[in-house]
Length: 252
Image 1 (tube, one colour):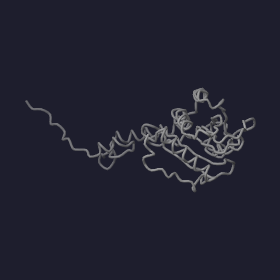
Image 2 (cartoon, rainbow, N blue to C red):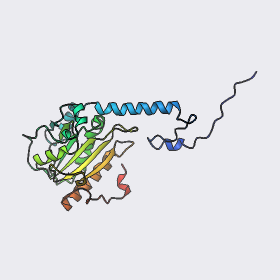
Image 3 (tube, rainbow, N blue to C red):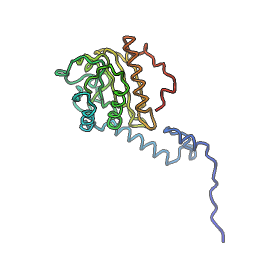
Image 4 (cartoon, rainbow, N blue to C red):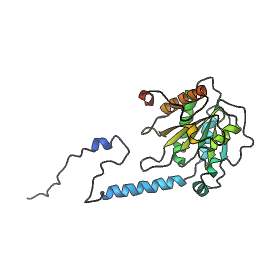
């Protein structure tokens, strides 16, 4: 009795490498193109990335979680963009709060602003544990302002908030633009002496915060605390401020 021929099994040198990264590597080929499964997976990732940009941030769980951190009553604001469509069409509207009147102005050393940015998923999943890690990493003598949550927001909106609250420095947690491998990456921006008109060259950025695949909360918070310490000593943030910690600081 004859048996069906078994397909030849070939050694795939990409197997171990694919297990070490979320990037699409070693996809193979079908003729002159990619295999159908790889093409469909790519199209699905593109659709998911586009869709995630439009998902609004559910602020209720974040506000409730912030209450328990002991930083004071959290503040909820929105930008001048009236809705998500306007936010995506007009980036300038996302950089200015709809109103800052009535914000507390006790002049804290540092404040944390949580902005939905382009990924509400990143903020929903990572903002609360990231704030907890930051507070634990800050030097104990620093005064920390009540946290602010802003919807339809971009990084520069914190310049207006920081000035209104008389913050010595502001740290922004913002949802980064979704990619084909990661849709929940959080970015952290530090601006010393925030005020409208600050440029990106006057900020320091820590990106790719999304454990377990990306940067962990403790490592990101430690880096932010070192940068804040350096900014206070230097009197400015941005391109002139460097994190001199070695690669071991990224563990965690």
